Length: 219
Image (cartoon, rainbow, N blue to C red):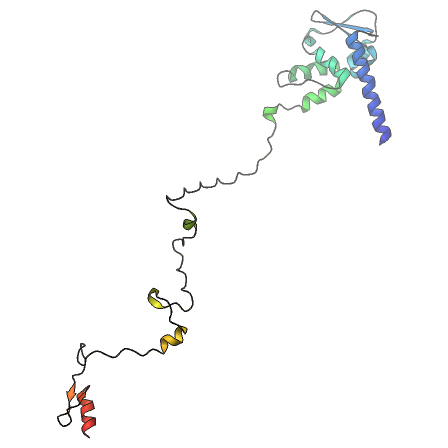
């Protein structure tokens, strides 16, 4: 792994130095003309990247190029020295035609695999969670007491143990004490609807609750 990385780094350094020499016009032995412009380059680099230049061979004079390469050859020449091809949706078709004409298989493969950003499949996004309902504003005058209110529909809280019915406090001793209380005496005899009429003994003048008790008394 270390040897392969070192070899790759060495290749990059050599190619970068050749590109610097091309920009400075140093050791350039090829002159290429197209569209009224001339380009200086190194024949070994041209021949290693293009079948067209391998067939032409190195010569002393300028080499004319087909006119159809006037607006694309600069990009291909930069690709020879850097390995980067400035592809766009507008120049892809022209660069593909130029790469096929000059016999540059690596550039042809890049052009055919290129997809404009608008045509690339977009990654699927996870469905958005439903928006949360807005919080209800607090009621006027509400505060800590509003939070402790019993929600609507909830059963009422059970009264505390020992609490008396009707809201009063339980008597001492709890329910047992309440059960031990005697009922208050009934009102006057005959004072309720349907109550039995009182009867008086004509002998001892005692008053009984009903005639039944009077008969028992007289037996």
